[in-house]
Image (cartoon, rainbow, N blue to C red):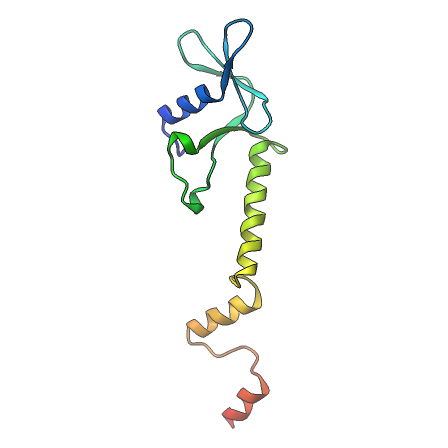
Length: 130
């Protein structure tokens, strides 16, 4: 099930399409220009290659479900959608590490917020206990 409405998906396919030499409208992947769909005479779309509708600006960063934020990307193991997702995950992991939301520092702060004692106490803390 797509997060985008049918009207948004249809508008995205039209935006990413062109009229071929035979007069038939064809849609391309937004990343690599692979042909992903062909418009039928009734206005529907025939899938030529596997593709997914994707958020241009990720939902996690405030991207909505509107037409301007929707794109069709080819899908599969080495596809544009897989590469975009991998880049997004790597970028977020790096940002979390730089902000101190991962690793030992983050675990220490979480224990402190829960009111738990540190796992390893410093020598100064040990002297205060005696």
